[in-house]
Every structure is written in C-alpha cells, then in structure tokens.
Length: 388
Ligand SMILES: [Zn+2]
Image 1 (cartoon, rainbow, N blue to C red):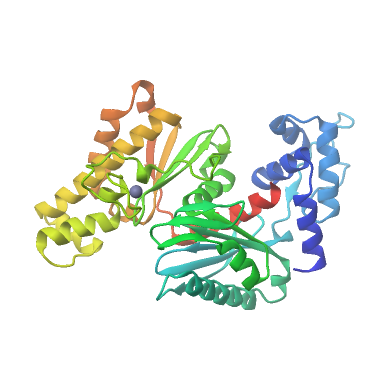
Image 2: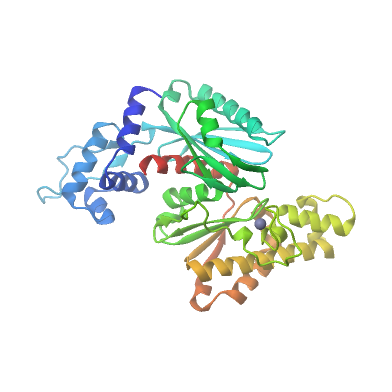
C-alpha cells in the first residue's frame, strides 16, 4: 500500500459518524449534490460540506468548481462524485473446489479476475491458493497494485467477522479456524472475513438492487442454502454474526441429517448434494446434479420427486422468512438457479400456501449471480468494513 492509499484508508476509517454516512452516500449514489446528500443522510448542509472537504482534499471525491450555483447563494447544486480509481480492493469467494478472485475499483467495478482450483479444502491449501491468486492479480495490476487497500474474503458458514474466525463451515469442513489472522500474516494486507451470502447482500445493498429497495432478502440455492437480509436500508448481521440461516430451519423430516450435523434442516433436502444423494440412491449409482436435472427433464420419477421435494421445502422456508422479516423482494441466487425451471412453479405454490396475508405480495425473482459477483460482494464487504 503506498502512502496515498494508506492516508485515504486512514481518513475513511477514522471518519466521524457523519463523515462515514456522507462518504457511503457519495460512494453508492455518485454523482450526487450536497443538497441531496443532506436530504439522504439527515445532516445539515454545513455538516455535509464539512465532511466532503477532506474527501476532496484526499482525492477520494471529485467536485466541480464552486462557481456552479443555482443562483441561490451558498447552495452549490453541482454534484460531487466518487473517484473510483482512488483505491483498489480485492474480493475473494472461497468455494469447496475453487477460489475466485477479483480486483475492483472503489465502486466495485471489476478490473481483473483470477480463478484457481482447489484439490484440498483444508485451511492451509486455501491460504496457498489465495496467496497465489493475489500474487497474480498484483502482477496484472502492475504499479496500480500500490492502491490495494485490502482484501475481502467470503466463506460459507458461521463466520465471526469481528475476530476473523470461521466458527463453523460444514461445506469446507472447518471449525474454529482463525482464517482472517492466518491470511493477514500470509498476505500482509488488511483482511475482512465475511459469510459469503452476507457479502453478496452487502454488494447488492450498496451497488445493486438495494439502491431502489428498502427491504430485500437474498436466498441462495446450490451446494448450500443461505440467505442474507437487508431490512430498512441495513444489512442484518445478527448479534453473533448469524442471521437469516434459512438453510438450517428445521422444516424437513427429522430423519434427514444435514451437513451441519443437525436433523431436519432445509439444506438436508434441498441442497445440490441432497438432490444428488436422493437420485443416486434411487438409481443405485452416482448421479451428479447435471444428470439429475437431465433425468428430471426426461420424466424420471426419482429425479422429479427429488427436485419437487427441494422446491416445496425452499418455498416453505422463503414463506417463513417473509412472514418473519417482511421484505418487499426476495432474490433467488446461487449456482442452483441454473436449474430453477425445475423449482419455479412448485416453489411459488409452496410460498403462496404459507405466506401470511399481505406478505404474499413479496415478489420473488431470480438473479443468476456468477462467482465473480460473489467475489465482488466480498470486495464490497471489505469497503464497508473500512467505512464502518
Ligand atoms: Zn443444517
């Protein structure tokens, strides 16, 4: 990190509450006038002007000359804008078989992407893979790598962002791994460790659908079933870093054992692995998710029944989430979206059957997030942790 980036990082992370609000507003709504920043943050115009000045001086925010006025003295209407090139962030999504890394600018526009397969998913192998992709990104960025302000790393499971500990990740087979500290030592840069679905939600909150929607939930289907909640303009993290774990709602038959070791979890029926296991057992051979989807399209009863059962339980879980939290929109994402035609109708029927009253007005849409989008979410989470 060069001196300029270090100074910018210090300025953002040491800002007052008002300063943080102003910076976050410019970051996500740029270009925006000072009047609109005041309206949006509830701060006085004087407070906004006071907060904007050091951001301009540090090269984080651009403002046209003060001559642009609307004829109303003291009320500059010319908008201020974020300078995206002022910083570079690295976002990394850790999957069980691959790490996906992006370098982004301050507005999380992707500058470069790297992927590396994982033959083992023990913490040491994942550290090695992350160190390798970060090295490749730095080489690609050249002199611009001096502007890297930090890394956001997202992992499935119960992640304590404050201490950087992965408390439980069934998919990775990790328990109480101080991965944030290990990464910081290995990479020598500030690390933000976050649950993967929460990171994706931060990305949508700051730079995606969250800008036009006060309350939404992201539900991801695939190897795991997760959700992220964004209520009244805030991403919900939970007092202990756990919130919105709909994959582990006990809505299924207790005979079904989950990856997490508990019984009757949604994930024990609806995850990719659960669908593969059900279809494989019925056919007496190993069948992967792509073949299971093909069999279902061909009318194979075991495959159809496995997808139907998954769709019912995910639809019921979404109704439970919507009844409790009341979002106006549910975005279904995750790699399972590629087979969503096999879920769609049954999932919506189950949702409608269990949604209480006006909660049924909640819209359900799909969004095919790529793994680069997930990595971008990790970069957004790192920027958010900087802003505080
Ligand atoms: Zn579970």
